[in-house]
Structure formats: structure tokens, C-alpha cells
Image 1: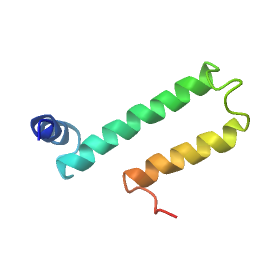
Image 2: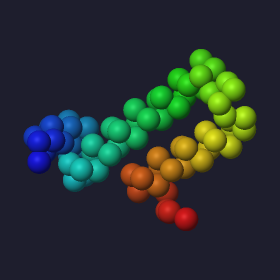
Image 3: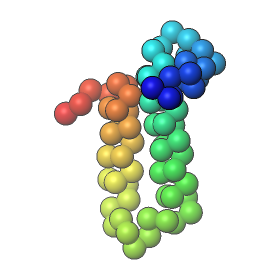
Length: 73
């Protein structure tokens, strides 16, 4: 697949003990968490999400589950 060389480079640079696909998933989750924080800090959820605390917690939990840091369910 086209991403394989990049995935292998990312894994070698940041987490050589992890499979390349998991290293890429961690970078993706990190960028998504950064986006969540930015949206919250700069008010982008205003008039979109009413219970922002619950939304943020659920979204962060899902990211943790997606990369295997938290169990699903």
C-alpha cells in the first residue's frame, strides 16, 4: 500500500517497538485530540455541542479505544 514506507518511517522515528500501522494510528489519534482541544479552546463547538464536557470525554475515550489504550465497550 502507498502509505507503507511512510508508516515504517514514522514507526522507526517515534515507536520502533510498535507495528507501523499502530504508530500511524497513534499519530492520527494525536492529531484528532489536538483538534478536539483546539475546537474547545477556541469555541468552535459553541452552538453545535451543548454538553461539551461529555462530548470531549466520549471523543477522547474513543480515540483511546481506537489505538488500544482503552478497552472497547
